[in-house]
Image (cartoon, rainbow, N blue to C red):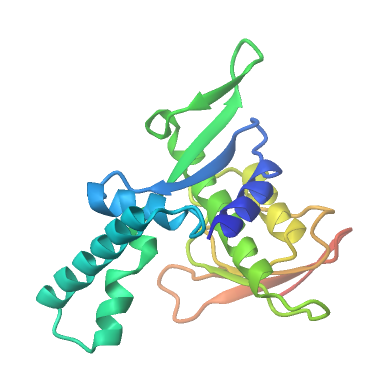
Length: 225
C-alpha cells in the first residue's frame, strides 16, 4: 500500500494543470481510529526483532479485541470476521494536498474548499488517473502489454478544452486506454497518437439521431458521417 502511494505521487508530480496546480497524497492512520488500534498499527510497523514481550502482548490484545468486537456484530464465517476485523484499508485515510505557485512566485499549499469548481474537478480526475495507472503498474507482468482501460461517463463537465486536452494527454503519457463520454468540445493534441471521436446529434422532435466519426492520428483528423 505504501509502494502504491509512492507510485501515485510520482505520477502526480508530473501531472500539472496549465495554471501549475498539482496534487500530492498522504496515506496516514485515520483520525477516527481508537487509541488501541493506533498503537497496534505503530507496533505492526515495528520490527519483530525489536519489539518487547510487553509490546507483543499489547498487539495481540488489540487485534483480539477487534476480532471479538466484529464477531459480536457480524453473524458470519470466521474467515469473513477476520477479513472485516483486520481490513487495514479502513484504518487509513488519504489526504489530498493541492499545491501551486502563489502571486509572489513561491510554491504554496491550497485548501480544497477554496478551489474553484473547475479546479476541484481537475484535481479529482488527475488523482483518479494516477491511482488507475499505479494500480495497473502493480499488476503488469514484465514483457506483457495488458489493456490499461479507464471508463468515464459524462466526464469533463465545466472544464475548458485546453484542460480536457491536458487530461487526455496525461492518460496518453500514462499509456492508458480510455472510453469517455463528455458533453462536447475539442481535445486533439500531437501527444495523443490515436483517437476515435463520435459526435452524436439528436435533433429535437426527430425520430432518430446522427453522428459524425472523427479519427485522429496525432497529426490530422478525418471526419466521416
